[in-house]
Image 1: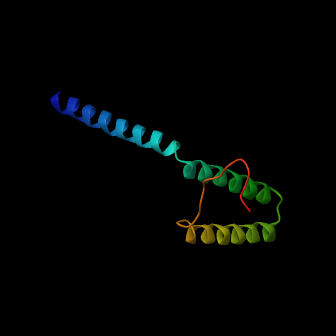
Image 2: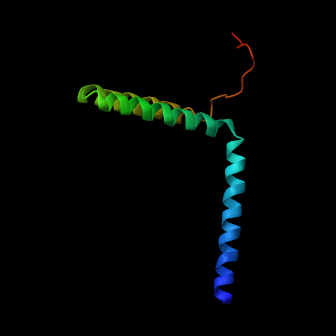
Image 3: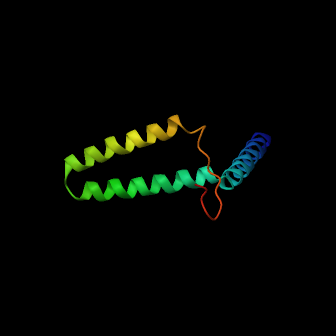
Amino acid sequence: MECAFHFLNVFYNFMKAIHLSLVKRLKNAKFWLLGIVVVLITIHLNVTWKSDNSNLWGISVIFLSTVCYLIWEKRNKLNLESECFPAF
């Protein structure tokens, strides 16, 4: 019985740590932006797949992969801060 109690205690602490980590991540704008991008790419590829045009789907995958790669390369230089009006 003591082993089961120890397991439940470890599991509870693990879930608590995950929850705190998730709450901290949700406050970060980068994770919101990443989530929005993933959803939009998924919708785009799904609609493209349903159109039964394999050439368009293949080109879309290549294009989106290239864009994701370029953003990944510049991820440390990206500034996600903004104000009401952009500075020119």
